[in-house]
Length: 269
Image 1 (tube, helix red, strand yellow):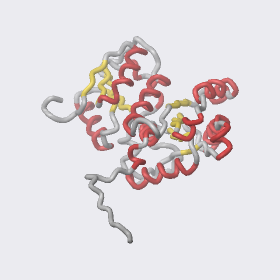
Image 2 (cartoon, rainbow, N blue to C red):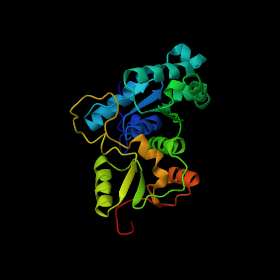
Image 3 (cartoon, helix red, strand yellow):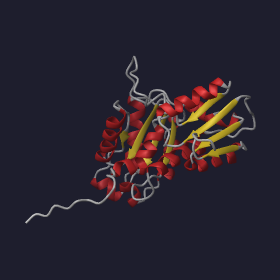
Image 4 (tube, one colour):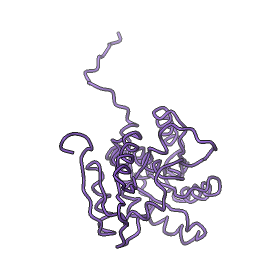
């Protein structure tokens, strides 16, 4: 006889919405002309892509290193190189953001070492920015993947400098802010005469607008050149405790001070 079991859980949790690599991929979608890529099988990437498309109701760019059974066991570093070359040839992005998954992390691929060798072998791709972050599914959560991606972009792209641009400010925004929140943040900053650089900026890439022309990469978002110049700002404002590592990384590279707010609403904020 079948038994009907009633769940006492107060909510239903979609594991994909708690996925660390999905959080990292969404952060990369806030960068202009970017192609997020999961170092995973095609199925893993497809699940995440469907989640984004259902949530944002628009097409989102995301690629995979297409790991198969043999590559998963023996190592899939060559898949990364092949994927980078294919993406560069077909879509020509300004940056490729690479997130690892549980499949490749279990094997223990040394992606950082491979990318250094890849740079030496392919000097023609020096203008292509590559940012890799370790985001296995079996630890941490969505916000951790987002935070690691932002920290990785700061460490890999921001240039050390002592110069400062008057009226320039950086915002490192957490994953709890929506596209509308970030757009409002920019409008408030500009109303005070400030030049704001927001990282990542999903208000231009994930706001539901339809472009006049098709683009295979992200549309809108923070330009790579703007990330390189973040050290020239007078102050960095980090929104959310998850942004503290990225703010400290920027401060260590440029000596730039930062302030951190857990939230941007309420009397205390």
